[in-house]
Picture 1 (cartoon, rainbow, N blue to C red):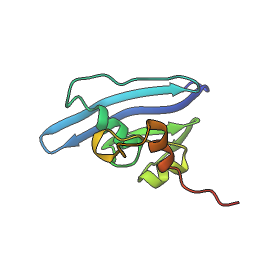
Picture 2 (cartoon, helix red, strand yellow):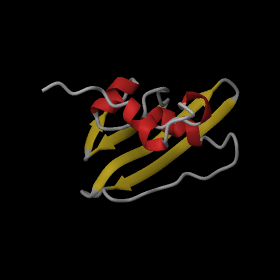
Picture 3 (cartoon, helix red, strand yellow):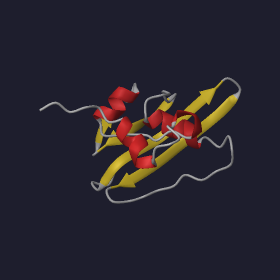
Length: 111
């Protein structure tokens, strides 16, 4: 793992009954980079992001943040690691912007 990697998902595999959603996926993101995941419906994009956000657990593979192996077992754990997610379609507040939808998910900070 390169020291500049902010996030690395290595060897991520997720299977649902009768469906191999992710098969040995490795994804790296460095500070300042912007990435897009492209693929057909059912290609596993949302599943991969749901694993990163703790909504699903990978069957195998590892996640590293700043070079440290982490176990993201829930959205709360993801948020604690600085990971947020703007969900597609059903989980958005329609009359808010993307930024406002993200801000809704940030826990309040108490001085």
